[in-house]
Image 1 (cartoon, rainbow, N blue to C red):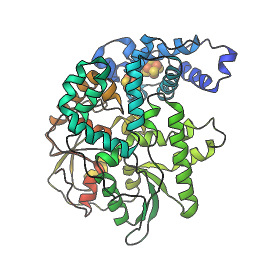
Image 2: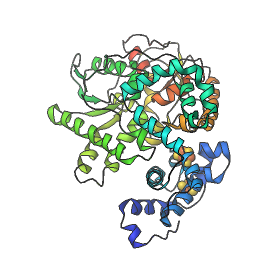
Image 3: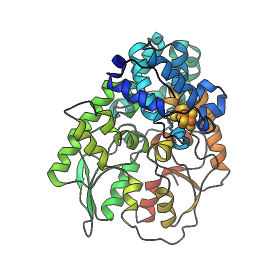
Length: 431
Ligand code: SF4
Ligand code: SF4
């Protein structure tokens, strides 16, 4: 694609990078067929190609974002399905990240939207605030219908609807500590505690620690680390995201310098995609560029790490698992085989639902901010999963777990919970 940026514009490294990305797009439109919003809405401006044109126009003309551009960029799930499909290697992820930051800086959203977004950004990434919000939501749920009818409060009504009916008690099963390896030592890893996941499903990191230590891997959960920054990163809140990244980089490099680390293990693929991108996110910060790149190089999804441990083959368990590959897993991190192979090796029969490339509609805060599109994607995903007639659904991202669980009665677990059970851990509570 031809571009017309001035030398002054290209002096900005963010613009220079986006220009390079734009030039790679040959407008072939292959990406439209696998874009969930184009598949649902059929509008070119809700396709990757249409969004690329909107972003080009906005950046090239150096203009503030307008309402139309914001509408179509906001509808993008950042699922990255378009990147898997694109034959020209267009780096849509970094282009839309830049567009979101530009929107945040130049567009004034209506006050009610700014208020709702600020509440989300100040609550979800902080476990104690998030837990309190979920407990309050349980009590306030009967008001959801009423709130949704008041434009100012609609987002809060949607949040009440989405809040899980039961909130687990705070667990210290994966608190900050060093968990000693059992048997012959095989490695040492840091585990991301994270923010929303330990509140919604503390058993995921507990199962991870049990499985890894049982296989001879020492696990460090470092005090002070927290949200990876993905939630606010996808809202264009750059400084908040970069500060979260800097905090985690400092903490993990300290742990690596003290006793060495083979990997930083992550059990939420949405967080994994972001942590693997820390090197890029902080590339313009001279104090952090190199350190962040080191952290990104150490980051591994739990299934990526387990695939290197050569876990023993187990006999059949007589249980069929529908494996839902999160977008951040298959498109963001390109991890497609490891989770299925690990499940099969552990004795589960694995089914792959149709349209596996399409997002379930969770996408960070998307199900709160774009509830109509999100609900349609959820219904489509659940239909495809239920058609495989599984006993259980497995996936590797907490967002997908909560989204899909709200649309089906089939139990849904993190892949690592099934693996932990197969290798000697307790039967997962959800089964
Ligand atoms: S598939 Fe790639 S090159 Fe083709 S229109 Fe989409 S982004 Fe551009
Ligand atoms: S990231 Fe997903 S929703 Fe956004 S343009 Fe690409 S395929 Fe479409």
